[in-house]
Length: 90
Image (cartoon, rainbow, N blue to C red; front, side, top):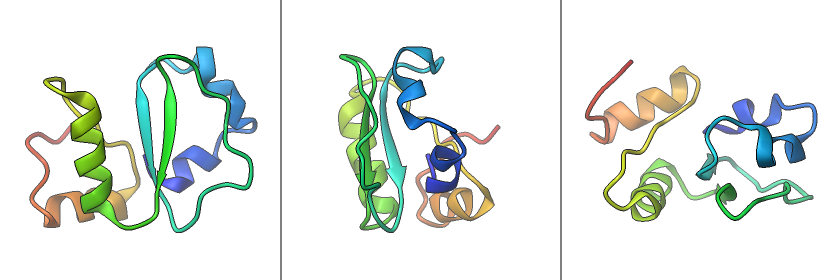
């Protein structure tokens, strides 16, 4: 998830228990928020500040044999495509 999508939430704590995807979420950003959002045993937030490659690497490690879904704006999707990390695009 790109920072812009994360920041759209009026209250970032809302995601815990409400967001339809209760999974680890990796937020691609320049800096982590001052206050870490509320998490659950299934939904966690990792703020990745060192690029798309590391974000994808961490997400794949957390996913194990499951799929990794990228939610982001055009710039984020372009980075994923340019790095050769996309298997499918919807």
